[in-house]
Length: 233
Image (cartoon, rainbow, N blue to C red; front, side, top):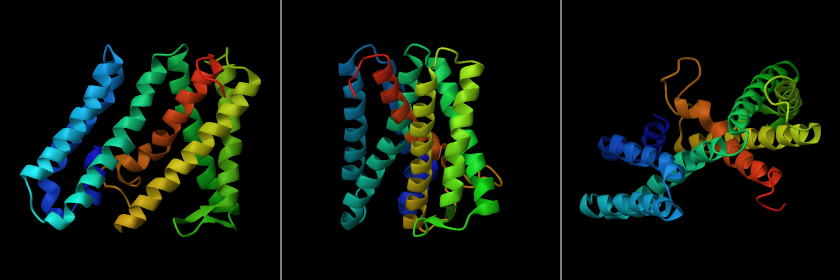
């Protein structure tokens, strides 16, 4: 659904009949980490690109738009399914389920606090060219709430998470979530739309709900790899 929303924004109306095939192809990429070998994972990514490239080659309309439309299609594949597949990679690590719940808890507390703190005390605009309603005060309030969320996770379902790691995770995931929110706002302004869709009344589209998690997923995965000693900092 998020891919359909992205392609609706990114591709011209005459290409909208292709939204669902593109979205289905991209959604299959999410399962790449479940492949039994790295080679098959690479094959999955290669097939997705080749299928998109051959599609535009065969269904040629305005040749001047091909490069842009293909670039937007590949961007959709990387931005949504590739980034989100890190959730599957994360689930396969030690305490993977707890890390997934930690992402959700931090992102939700961050978004909620940023909205209410910004509405009540927001004075300085955070990035007015991209998102004029977001404030510095709201962003700081969101990060403070992320710390509360991370500590709440430690005292409930994630007792093995150290205090220092909880604080660092809150800051990294909180900042990544806010960056993801701003990036989607940047895309929407570039495409000239207010919301990615209207499937969630009062909240916009599915992509509007996933934007923070899309950036938080890979950041959390690589941070977790560092914690379990698989990669150096």
